[in-house]
Length: 448
View (cartoon, one colour):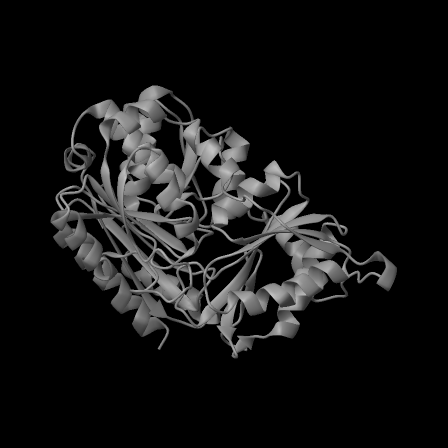
């Protein structure tokens, strides 16, 4: 069972090695219990194992009296949108996000259409470890298929931008869906914005055409396609389409970190308001908030923590440096479709190519790495780094973050994989890579 990861954020595991139908049914029945047999929106990404999990989940939800509104294959942010649009008590997305093809998982949503906060997540864990409230034969739930799960989502996104002005520009865009659920809304949304769209991996069957995480090493084909088609931008979604990486018009991978920065730059140029990011996100967003005179806040890593902080400070926009923009006007979920729309709207406003806009942002290099590590040995890695980097200002509570005047490094356990993530940022490639490499070496030695 080492490959099954259960947390307040949900469940992930490898099919046949910890993620079995019986446990999935119990998880779903526990969700049905805490929503008291209410209405639950259900959707899944395109993974081939999703249909099997769907049946196990339906059994658990219906056995606890839930009315299930099934979206079929849909993105994670679409699930969140539809929870609020349909007035549901909760939602459940079947996805393992960026994990490899053999993985799948369950991501629950609250009535707000957001991931569970700590209190709700702990309630769910308590029921999983206890006894779900199964109903009698006469009080079982039901399942209905939702005919158009994407229309409301696109409608909310379009309210954010000048649709007519974007259409007038007739952008050419390459969209890499990587055979994920983003292909259900992404191509249509871009075409409805007047774009000429070249779609890569447009069949949502989960047979990824490259490794699932939208990192530079995995997006060579997209970068080449942007250059070959003389496109204005290249967009790469992860399999459940809550994250977006970007390639500029020169074919340059600008990454996931700058997805949030571009969105923040665009939004704050029109309206001032609080910005929330997590502790692993580039300081570019902090610089932008200062530029526009807007309050800036950091939360612990994790979408639930970002959302909780956004609600606390009534944030205008927020997100995570993994390409996840959270726009409250659409939903409290990371949303690649919001990101694409904001980038196109920003290009209209600035009347400049994407590469020039990117070059106008504050300059830092952020380097991310990871090492395999049992979760019970993470503290040893943190202790080793704190000792080695004694001159840094240490912040604990979310792994360990070490800050200097011009750079920082963080080590923390992943919420979804048995790994330690190591992130370093500094002005210039050399300093950032050196700092990250030193931290990885120290952490690796500590957990051997």
